[in-house]
Image 1 (tube, helix red, strand yellow):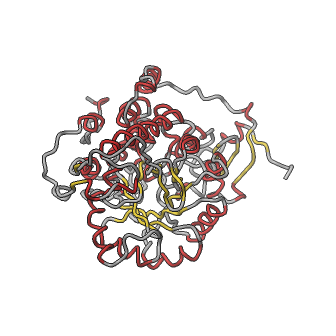
Image 2 (cartoon, helix red, strand yellow):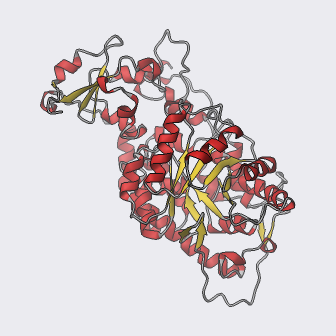
Image 3 (cartoon, one colour):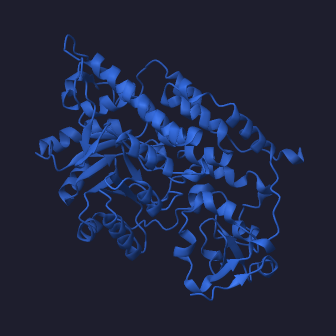
Length: 502
Protein backbone atom coordinates (compact mmCIF):
# COMPACT_ATOMS: atom_id res chain seq x y z
CA UNK A 1 0.00 0.00 0.00
CA UNK A 2 2.97 2.31 0.48
CA UNK A 3 3.89 2.11 -3.21
CA UNK A 4 1.33 4.70 -4.29
CA UNK A 5 2.19 5.96 -7.74
CA UNK A 6 2.76 9.71 -7.96
CA UNK A 7 2.06 11.23 -11.37
CA UNK A 8 2.98 14.60 -12.77
CA UNK A 9 0.76 17.08 -14.57
CA UNK A 10 2.57 16.74 -17.92
CA UNK A 11 2.34 12.94 -17.66
CA UNK A 12 -1.43 13.08 -17.20
CA UNK A 13 -1.75 15.69 -19.96
CA UNK A 14 -0.41 13.18 -22.48
CA UNK A 15 -3.63 11.17 -22.05
CA UNK A 16 -6.12 13.70 -23.36
CA UNK A 17 -8.09 11.96 -26.10
CA UNK A 18 -10.68 9.29 -26.71
CA UNK A 19 -8.06 6.56 -27.12
CA UNK A 20 -6.43 7.30 -23.76
CA UNK A 21 -8.33 9.50 -21.35
CA UNK A 22 -7.04 10.26 -17.84
CA UNK A 23 -8.58 12.79 -15.48
CA UNK A 24 -7.73 14.22 -12.06
CA UNK A 25 -10.45 14.30 -9.37
CA UNK A 26 -9.75 15.31 -5.76
CA UNK A 27 -6.00 14.92 -6.23
CA UNK A 28 -6.19 11.40 -7.68
CA UNK A 29 -5.67 10.23 -11.25
CA UNK A 30 -8.11 7.91 -12.99
CA UNK A 31 -8.11 6.19 -16.38
CA UNK A 32 -11.65 6.65 -17.66
CA UNK A 33 -11.03 5.57 -21.27
CA UNK A 34 -13.21 2.47 -21.10
CA UNK A 35 -15.88 4.33 -19.11
CA UNK A 36 -16.37 7.01 -21.79
CA UNK A 37 -19.16 5.20 -23.73
CA UNK A 38 -20.98 4.40 -20.48
CA UNK A 39 -20.96 7.90 -18.97
CA UNK A 40 -24.63 8.93 -18.60
CA UNK A 41 -23.86 12.53 -19.49
CA UNK A 42 -22.09 11.60 -22.72
CA UNK A 43 -18.40 11.47 -23.61
CA UNK A 44 -17.90 15.12 -24.56
CA UNK A 45 -18.02 16.54 -21.04
CA UNK A 46 -15.34 14.07 -19.87
CA UNK A 47 -13.20 14.66 -22.95
CA UNK A 48 -13.30 18.39 -22.24
CA UNK A 49 -11.32 17.65 -19.06
CA UNK A 50 -9.15 14.85 -20.50
CA UNK A 51 -5.62 15.18 -19.17
CA UNK A 52 -6.76 17.88 -16.71
CA UNK A 53 -8.21 18.42 -13.27
CA UNK A 54 -11.97 17.76 -13.51
CA UNK A 55 -12.79 18.22 -9.83
CA UNK A 56 -14.71 21.47 -10.18
CA UNK A 57 -16.99 20.09 -12.88
CA UNK A 58 -17.32 16.68 -11.19
CA UNK A 59 -18.15 17.69 -7.65
CA UNK A 60 -21.56 19.42 -7.89
CA UNK A 61 -23.26 16.56 -9.74
CA UNK A 62 -21.65 13.45 -8.24
CA UNK A 63 -21.45 12.06 -4.72
CA UNK A 64 -17.81 11.98 -3.58
CA UNK A 65 -17.61 8.19 -3.93
CA UNK A 66 -19.18 7.95 -7.41
CA UNK A 67 -15.92 7.58 -9.29
CA UNK A 68 -14.38 5.09 -6.86
CA UNK A 69 -17.56 3.01 -6.91
CA UNK A 70 -17.91 2.88 -10.69
CA UNK A 71 -14.29 2.43 -11.76
CA UNK A 72 -12.44 -0.85 -11.10
CA UNK A 73 -9.32 -0.57 -8.87
CA UNK A 74 -6.89 -1.02 -11.78
CA UNK A 75 -8.18 2.27 -13.24
CA UNK A 76 -7.17 4.15 -10.07
CA UNK A 77 -3.72 5.15 -11.29
CA UNK A 78 -2.31 7.08 -8.33
CA UNK A 79 -2.07 10.58 -6.90
CA UNK A 80 -1.12 13.79 -8.64
CA UNK A 81 1.86 15.93 -7.72
CA UNK A 82 -0.08 19.16 -7.32
CA UNK A 83 3.01 21.31 -7.86
CA UNK A 84 3.28 20.02 -11.44
CA UNK A 85 -0.28 20.78 -12.48
CA UNK A 86 -0.72 23.97 -14.45
CA UNK A 87 -3.14 26.27 -12.68
CA UNK A 88 -6.21 26.87 -14.76
CA UNK A 89 -7.25 30.49 -14.68
CA UNK A 90 -11.00 30.34 -14.52
CA UNK A 91 -12.69 33.02 -16.54
CA UNK A 92 -15.41 34.72 -14.54
CA UNK A 93 -18.38 35.09 -16.86
CA UNK A 94 -20.74 38.05 -16.86
CA UNK A 95 -23.43 35.74 -15.49
CA UNK A 96 -21.16 34.70 -12.60
CA UNK A 97 -20.26 38.32 -11.82
CA UNK A 98 -23.94 39.21 -11.71
CA UNK A 99 -24.67 36.18 -9.53
CA UNK A 100 -21.98 37.26 -7.07
CA UNK A 101 -23.47 40.76 -6.92
CA UNK A 102 -26.87 39.30 -6.12
CA UNK A 103 -25.29 37.12 -3.44
CA UNK A 104 -23.79 40.21 -1.79
CA UNK A 105 -27.10 42.08 -2.09
CA UNK A 106 -29.30 39.32 -0.64
CA UNK A 107 -32.07 40.44 1.71
CA UNK A 108 -31.00 39.94 5.31
CA UNK A 109 -32.32 36.66 6.70
CA UNK A 110 -34.50 38.41 9.27
CA UNK A 111 -36.49 40.01 6.42
CA UNK A 112 -37.41 36.59 4.98
CA UNK A 113 -40.95 35.97 6.20
CA UNK A 114 -42.27 33.08 4.09
CA UNK A 115 -41.03 30.13 2.03
CA UNK A 116 -41.69 31.90 -1.27
CA UNK A 117 -39.01 34.44 -0.30
CA UNK A 118 -36.30 31.76 -0.39
CA UNK A 119 -37.27 30.88 -3.94
CA UNK A 120 -37.12 34.53 -5.00
CA UNK A 121 -33.58 34.80 -3.61
CA UNK A 122 -32.38 31.41 -4.88
CA UNK A 123 -33.39 32.25 -8.44
CA UNK A 124 -30.88 35.10 -8.44
CA UNK A 125 -27.99 33.64 -6.43
CA UNK A 126 -27.56 30.19 -8.02
CA UNK A 127 -26.35 29.43 -11.54
CA UNK A 128 -28.72 29.19 -14.46
CA UNK A 129 -27.95 25.47 -14.74
CA UNK A 130 -28.78 24.87 -11.06
CA UNK A 131 -31.99 26.89 -11.31
CA UNK A 132 -33.04 25.01 -14.43
CA UNK A 133 -32.45 21.65 -12.76
CA UNK A 134 -34.15 22.49 -9.46
CA UNK A 135 -37.15 24.42 -10.74
CA UNK A 136 -37.93 22.41 -13.87
CA UNK A 137 -40.88 20.06 -14.22
CA UNK A 138 -42.09 17.85 -17.03
CA UNK A 139 -43.60 18.89 -20.35
CA UNK A 140 -45.85 21.95 -19.93
CA UNK A 141 -45.37 22.10 -16.14
CA UNK A 142 -49.13 21.95 -15.59
CA UNK A 143 -48.84 19.48 -12.71
CA UNK A 144 -46.12 21.60 -11.09
CA UNK A 145 -48.53 24.53 -10.95
CA UNK A 146 -51.54 22.38 -10.07
CA UNK A 147 -49.69 21.05 -7.01
CA UNK A 148 -49.77 24.58 -5.63
CA UNK A 149 -53.26 25.48 -6.83
CA UNK A 150 -54.86 22.34 -5.35
CA UNK A 151 -54.35 23.59 -1.82
CA UNK A 152 -56.23 26.76 -2.66
CA UNK A 153 -59.34 24.80 -3.66
CA UNK A 154 -59.61 23.47 -0.11
CA UNK A 155 -61.21 25.84 2.38
CA UNK A 156 -61.08 25.84 6.17
CA UNK A 157 -64.10 25.41 8.46
CA UNK A 158 -62.63 26.81 11.69
CA UNK A 159 -64.04 26.07 15.14
CA UNK A 160 -64.26 28.88 17.70
CA UNK A 161 -64.28 29.47 21.45
CA UNK A 162 -61.81 26.73 22.20
CA UNK A 163 -58.98 27.32 24.64
CA UNK A 164 -56.00 27.55 22.28
CA UNK A 165 -53.55 29.03 24.78
CA UNK A 166 -51.32 26.04 24.14
CA UNK A 167 -51.06 24.39 20.73
CA UNK A 168 -48.79 21.46 19.88
CA UNK A 169 -47.88 20.60 16.28
CA UNK A 170 -45.33 17.89 17.10
CA UNK A 171 -46.08 14.38 15.87
CA UNK A 172 -44.70 10.90 15.27
CA UNK A 173 -43.71 9.78 11.77
CA UNK A 174 -43.09 6.04 11.29
CA UNK A 175 -42.37 5.71 14.99
CA UNK A 176 -39.95 8.66 15.04
CA UNK A 177 -40.64 11.86 16.96
CA UNK A 178 -40.77 15.02 14.87
CA UNK A 179 -41.16 18.61 16.02
CA UNK A 180 -43.19 19.32 12.86
CA UNK A 181 -45.77 17.27 10.90
CA UNK A 182 -43.34 17.85 8.02
CA UNK A 183 -40.26 15.93 6.86
CA UNK A 184 -37.54 17.21 4.53
CA UNK A 185 -38.21 15.34 1.30
CA UNK A 186 -35.37 14.10 -0.89
CA UNK A 187 -34.01 16.48 -3.52
CA UNK A 188 -30.92 15.75 -5.63
CA UNK A 189 -27.65 17.56 -6.31
CA UNK A 190 -27.53 20.03 -3.44
CA UNK A 191 -24.01 21.20 -4.32
CA UNK A 192 -25.25 22.68 -7.58
CA UNK A 193 -26.73 25.40 -5.38
CA UNK A 194 -24.48 25.51 -2.31
CA UNK A 195 -20.95 24.18 -1.66
CA UNK A 196 -22.02 22.31 1.49
CA UNK A 197 -25.00 20.72 -0.26
CA UNK A 198 -27.33 18.47 1.70
CA UNK A 199 -25.23 18.72 4.86
CA UNK A 200 -27.06 22.03 5.43
CA UNK A 201 -30.26 20.01 5.73
CA UNK A 202 -28.77 17.36 8.01
CA UNK A 203 -27.39 19.90 10.48
CA UNK A 204 -30.50 22.08 10.53
CA UNK A 205 -32.76 19.04 10.96
CA UNK A 206 -30.58 17.95 13.86
CA UNK A 207 -30.96 21.30 15.63
CA UNK A 208 -34.74 21.41 15.29
CA UNK A 209 -35.96 17.84 15.65
CA UNK A 210 -37.02 17.50 12.02
CA UNK A 211 -36.52 14.34 9.93
CA UNK A 212 -34.45 14.48 6.74
CA UNK A 213 -34.98 12.04 3.90
CA UNK A 214 -31.60 11.36 2.29
CA UNK A 215 -31.66 11.34 -1.51
CA UNK A 216 -30.03 8.57 -3.54
CA UNK A 217 -28.77 11.27 -5.92
CA UNK A 218 -27.48 13.72 -3.32
CA UNK A 219 -24.23 15.56 -3.99
CA UNK A 220 -23.00 14.59 -0.54
CA UNK A 221 -22.38 10.92 0.07
CA UNK A 222 -24.74 8.90 2.24
CA UNK A 223 -22.07 8.36 4.89
CA UNK A 224 -21.16 12.06 4.97
CA UNK A 225 -24.72 12.91 5.93
CA UNK A 226 -25.06 10.11 8.48
CA UNK A 227 -21.71 11.10 10.01
CA UNK A 228 -22.93 14.71 10.31
CA UNK A 229 -26.10 13.63 12.13
CA UNK A 230 -26.38 13.14 15.89
CA UNK A 231 -26.32 9.48 17.01
CA UNK A 232 -30.05 9.56 17.84
CA UNK A 233 -31.13 11.72 14.88
CA UNK A 234 -33.77 9.94 12.78
CA UNK A 235 -33.06 9.80 9.05
CA UNK A 236 -35.07 8.31 6.19
CA UNK A 237 -33.64 7.09 2.87
CA UNK A 238 -35.12 7.69 -0.57
CA UNK A 239 -34.18 4.91 -2.99
CA UNK A 240 -33.96 4.78 -6.75
CA UNK A 241 -33.75 1.08 -7.53
CA UNK A 242 -30.65 0.11 -9.48
CA UNK A 243 -30.80 -2.29 -12.42
CA UNK A 244 -28.12 -4.22 -10.55
CA UNK A 245 -30.10 -5.51 -7.59
CA UNK A 246 -26.95 -6.46 -5.71
CA UNK A 247 -25.94 -2.78 -5.62
CA UNK A 248 -29.41 -1.90 -4.30
CA UNK A 249 -29.27 -4.64 -1.65
CA UNK A 250 -25.85 -3.51 -0.46
CA UNK A 251 -26.97 0.14 -0.30
CA UNK A 252 -30.18 -0.64 1.60
CA UNK A 253 -28.50 -2.92 4.10
CA UNK A 254 -25.69 -0.42 4.65
CA UNK A 255 -28.31 2.25 5.35
CA UNK A 256 -30.06 0.01 7.84
CA UNK A 257 -26.77 -0.83 9.55
CA UNK A 258 -26.08 2.89 9.90
CA UNK A 259 -29.38 3.42 11.66
CA UNK A 260 -31.69 4.78 8.95
CA UNK A 261 -35.27 4.47 10.18
CA UNK A 262 -37.32 4.04 6.98
CA UNK A 263 -36.90 3.23 3.29
CA UNK A 264 -38.87 5.29 0.76
CA UNK A 265 -38.76 3.50 -2.61
CA UNK A 266 -39.46 5.83 -5.54
CA UNK A 267 -41.98 4.04 -7.76
CA UNK A 268 -43.02 6.79 -10.20
CA UNK A 269 -39.80 7.05 -12.19
CA UNK A 270 -39.26 4.08 -14.54
CA UNK A 271 -38.06 6.83 -16.88
CA UNK A 272 -37.41 10.46 -16.06
CA UNK A 273 -39.88 13.01 -17.32
CA UNK A 274 -38.85 15.50 -19.99
CA UNK A 275 -37.90 18.55 -17.97
CA UNK A 276 -37.52 21.11 -20.69
CA UNK A 277 -35.92 23.93 -18.70
CA UNK A 278 -33.20 21.51 -17.67
CA UNK A 279 -32.91 20.04 -21.17
CA UNK A 280 -32.35 23.46 -22.74
CA UNK A 281 -29.37 24.03 -20.46
CA UNK A 282 -27.54 21.36 -22.47
CA UNK A 283 -27.22 23.98 -25.19
CA UNK A 284 -26.31 26.90 -22.94
CA UNK A 285 -22.74 28.01 -22.26
CA UNK A 286 -19.46 26.23 -22.89
CA UNK A 287 -19.90 27.10 -26.57
CA UNK A 288 -21.79 23.89 -27.18
CA UNK A 289 -19.04 21.66 -25.78
CA UNK A 290 -21.61 19.90 -23.59
CA UNK A 291 -23.35 18.57 -26.68
CA UNK A 292 -22.46 14.98 -27.37
CA UNK A 293 -19.86 14.80 -30.10
CA UNK A 294 -20.85 14.38 -33.71
CA UNK A 295 -21.05 10.85 -35.04
CA UNK A 296 -22.70 9.42 -31.94
CA UNK A 297 -26.34 8.99 -32.81
CA UNK A 298 -27.24 6.75 -29.87
CA UNK A 299 -27.04 9.44 -27.18
CA UNK A 300 -29.45 12.39 -27.11
CA UNK A 301 -27.97 15.84 -26.95
CA UNK A 302 -30.73 17.54 -24.98
CA UNK A 303 -31.19 15.69 -21.71
CA UNK A 304 -29.78 18.23 -19.24
CA UNK A 305 -28.46 17.50 -15.76
CA UNK A 306 -31.21 14.99 -14.91
CA UNK A 307 -30.09 12.61 -17.66
CA UNK A 308 -26.50 12.72 -16.47
CA UNK A 309 -27.33 11.23 -13.09
CA UNK A 310 -30.17 8.79 -13.65
CA UNK A 311 -29.34 6.15 -16.25
CA UNK A 312 -28.97 3.40 -13.65
CA UNK A 313 -32.65 3.49 -12.60
CA UNK A 314 -34.48 0.23 -13.30
CA UNK A 315 -37.62 0.49 -15.48
CA UNK A 316 -38.54 -3.14 -14.75
CA UNK A 317 -39.41 -2.45 -11.09
CA UNK A 318 -42.83 -3.98 -10.34
CA UNK A 319 -45.11 -5.30 -7.59
CA UNK A 320 -43.32 -8.66 -7.75
CA UNK A 321 -40.20 -6.95 -6.34
CA UNK A 322 -41.87 -5.88 -3.08
CA UNK A 323 -41.43 -9.28 -1.33
CA UNK A 324 -37.72 -9.12 -2.20
CA UNK A 325 -37.39 -5.70 -0.59
CA UNK A 326 -39.20 -6.98 2.49
CA UNK A 327 -36.71 -9.87 2.62
CA UNK A 328 -33.58 -7.69 2.59
CA UNK A 329 -34.49 -5.14 5.27
CA UNK A 330 -36.41 -4.76 8.51
CA UNK A 331 -36.84 -1.00 7.93
CA UNK A 332 -40.40 0.20 7.30
CA UNK A 333 -40.93 0.33 3.54
CA UNK A 334 -42.87 3.23 2.01
CA UNK A 335 -43.77 3.44 -1.68
CA UNK A 336 -43.19 7.00 -2.90
CA UNK A 337 -45.20 8.05 -5.94
CA UNK A 338 -48.68 6.52 -5.53
CA UNK A 339 -51.21 8.36 -7.73
CA UNK A 340 -54.47 6.36 -7.52
CA UNK A 341 -56.68 4.60 -4.99
CA UNK A 342 -56.17 1.34 -6.88
CA UNK A 343 -52.41 1.41 -6.31
CA UNK A 344 -52.85 2.54 -2.70
CA UNK A 345 -54.90 -0.62 -2.10
CA UNK A 346 -52.27 -2.79 -3.80
CA UNK A 347 -49.57 -1.13 -1.68
CA UNK A 348 -51.46 -1.91 1.52
CA UNK A 349 -52.01 -5.50 0.42
CA UNK A 350 -48.32 -5.90 -0.50
CA UNK A 351 -47.42 -5.48 3.16
CA UNK A 352 -45.53 -2.18 3.05
CA UNK A 353 -45.79 0.28 5.91
CA UNK A 354 -46.89 3.37 4.04
CA UNK A 355 -47.27 5.36 0.85
CA UNK A 356 -46.45 8.84 -0.39
CA UNK A 357 -49.13 10.33 -2.63
CA UNK A 358 -46.84 12.19 -4.99
CA UNK A 359 -46.23 13.17 -8.60
CA UNK A 360 -42.51 13.75 -8.06
CA UNK A 361 -42.90 17.51 -7.71
CA UNK A 362 -44.50 17.69 -11.15
CA UNK A 363 -41.31 16.30 -12.70
CA UNK A 364 -42.68 13.02 -14.11
CA UNK A 365 -46.10 12.60 -15.80
CA UNK A 366 -47.51 16.01 -16.61
CA UNK A 367 -51.23 16.50 -15.87
CA UNK A 368 -51.04 13.83 -13.16
CA UNK A 369 -53.19 14.98 -10.25
CA UNK A 370 -51.85 16.57 -7.09
CA UNK A 371 -51.09 14.38 -4.10
CA UNK A 372 -53.76 16.26 -2.17
CA UNK A 373 -56.45 15.39 -4.72
CA UNK A 374 -55.34 11.75 -4.71
CA UNK A 375 -55.61 11.78 -0.90
CA UNK A 376 -59.37 12.43 -0.96
CA UNK A 377 -59.74 9.45 -3.32
CA UNK A 378 -57.45 7.11 -1.38
CA UNK A 379 -58.83 7.54 2.16
CA UNK A 380 -62.44 6.42 1.38
CA UNK A 381 -61.16 3.52 -0.76
CA UNK A 382 -58.94 2.24 2.06
CA UNK A 383 -61.61 2.87 4.69
CA UNK A 384 -64.18 0.87 2.68
CA UNK A 385 -61.91 -2.17 2.91
CA UNK A 386 -61.13 -1.73 6.58
CA UNK A 387 -57.55 -0.67 5.76
CA UNK A 388 -57.85 2.83 7.24
CA UNK A 389 -57.17 4.02 9.83
CA UNK A 390 -54.31 1.67 10.64
CA UNK A 391 -51.37 2.72 12.86
CA UNK A 392 -49.12 0.36 10.87
CA UNK A 393 -49.86 1.99 7.50
CA UNK A 394 -49.11 5.69 7.18
CA UNK A 395 -50.09 8.00 4.35
CA UNK A 396 -47.97 10.96 3.30
CA UNK A 397 -48.44 13.68 0.70
CA UNK A 398 -45.87 15.89 -1.03
CA UNK A 399 -45.76 18.52 -3.76
CA UNK A 400 -46.75 22.18 -3.76
CA UNK A 401 -46.58 22.83 -0.02
CA UNK A 402 -45.52 26.38 0.81
CA UNK A 403 -47.49 27.12 4.00
CA UNK A 404 -48.28 25.44 7.30
CA UNK A 405 -51.94 25.87 6.31
CA UNK A 406 -51.31 23.49 3.38
CA UNK A 407 -49.96 20.89 5.79
CA UNK A 408 -52.97 21.27 8.10
CA UNK A 409 -55.34 20.70 5.18
CA UNK A 410 -53.56 17.48 4.20
CA UNK A 411 -53.57 16.18 7.77
CA UNK A 412 -57.24 17.02 8.24
CA UNK A 413 -57.96 14.98 5.12
CA UNK A 414 -56.11 11.94 6.46
CA UNK A 415 -52.36 12.36 5.90
CA UNK A 416 -49.93 11.48 8.69
CA UNK A 417 -47.43 14.14 7.64
CA UNK A 418 -46.29 16.05 4.57
CA UNK A 419 -43.03 16.07 2.61
CA UNK A 420 -41.45 19.41 1.68
CA UNK A 421 -38.59 19.44 -0.84
CA UNK A 422 -37.88 22.50 -2.97
CA UNK A 423 -38.54 25.16 -0.27
CA UNK A 424 -35.83 23.68 1.99
CA UNK A 425 -33.56 23.32 -1.03
CA UNK A 426 -34.02 26.99 -1.96
CA UNK A 427 -33.47 27.95 1.68
CA UNK A 428 -29.99 26.44 1.79
CA UNK A 429 -29.11 27.60 -1.73
CA UNK A 430 -29.82 31.14 -0.53
CA UNK A 431 -28.50 31.13 3.04
CA UNK A 432 -26.93 27.74 3.81
CA UNK A 433 -27.82 25.98 7.05
CA UNK A 434 -29.14 29.25 8.53
CA UNK A 435 -31.71 29.41 5.73
CA UNK A 436 -33.03 25.93 6.51
CA UNK A 437 -33.29 26.78 10.21
CA UNK A 438 -35.19 29.94 9.30
CA UNK A 439 -37.56 27.94 7.08
CA UNK A 440 -38.29 25.59 9.98
CA UNK A 441 -38.96 28.59 12.23
CA UNK A 442 -41.35 30.04 9.64
CA UNK A 443 -43.25 26.75 9.66
CA UNK A 444 -43.39 26.88 13.47
CA UNK A 445 -44.79 30.42 13.49
CA UNK A 446 -47.38 29.55 10.85
CA UNK A 447 -48.44 26.35 12.64
CA UNK A 448 -49.00 28.21 15.88
CA UNK A 449 -51.13 30.90 14.26
CA UNK A 450 -53.12 28.62 11.96
CA UNK A 451 -53.87 25.98 14.58
CA UNK A 452 -55.14 28.63 16.98
CA UNK A 453 -57.33 30.20 14.32
CA UNK A 454 -58.59 26.79 13.21
CA UNK A 455 -59.40 25.71 16.77
CA UNK A 456 -57.10 22.67 16.78
CA UNK A 457 -54.82 22.29 19.80
CA UNK A 458 -53.02 19.15 18.64
CA UNK A 459 -52.48 17.31 15.37
CA UNK A 460 -55.08 14.74 16.50
CA UNK A 461 -57.74 17.46 16.59
CA UNK A 462 -57.34 18.12 12.87
CA UNK A 463 -60.41 16.34 11.48
CA UNK A 464 -62.07 16.22 8.04
CA UNK A 465 -64.90 18.45 9.27
CA UNK A 466 -62.40 21.32 9.56
CA UNK A 467 -62.01 21.56 5.78
CA UNK A 468 -64.23 21.79 2.73
CA UNK A 469 -62.58 19.85 -0.10
CA UNK A 470 -65.68 19.64 -2.29
CA UNK A 471 -64.07 21.73 -5.06
CA UNK A 472 -60.74 19.89 -5.05
CA UNK A 473 -61.44 17.67 -8.05
CA UNK A 474 -62.89 20.52 -10.10
CA UNK A 475 -60.02 22.04 -12.03
CA UNK A 476 -61.86 25.09 -13.34
CA UNK A 477 -62.79 26.67 -10.02
CA UNK A 478 -61.88 30.34 -9.77
CA UNK A 479 -59.85 31.15 -6.67
CA UNK A 480 -57.88 34.29 -5.79
CA UNK A 481 -54.48 34.23 -7.45
CA UNK A 482 -51.47 33.20 -5.36
CA UNK A 483 -49.33 36.17 -6.38
CA UNK A 484 -46.21 35.02 -4.48
CA UNK A 485 -46.23 31.71 -6.32
CA UNK A 486 -46.92 33.30 -9.70
CA UNK A 487 -44.18 35.87 -9.15
CA UNK A 488 -41.57 33.16 -8.54
CA UNK A 489 -42.75 30.81 -11.29
CA UNK A 490 -40.68 31.20 -14.47
CA UNK A 491 -42.69 30.32 -17.60
CA UNK A 492 -41.30 27.87 -20.11
CA UNK A 493 -39.43 29.38 -23.04
CA UNK A 494 -39.38 28.26 -26.66
CA UNK A 495 -36.41 27.57 -28.90
CA UNK A 496 -34.02 30.51 -29.23
CA UNK A 497 -32.04 31.78 -32.20
CA UNK A 498 -28.23 31.83 -32.12
CA UNK A 499 -27.54 35.43 -31.17
CA UNK A 500 -23.94 35.27 -32.38
CA UNK A 501 -25.15 34.73 -35.95
CA UNK A 502 -27.74 37.48 -35.98
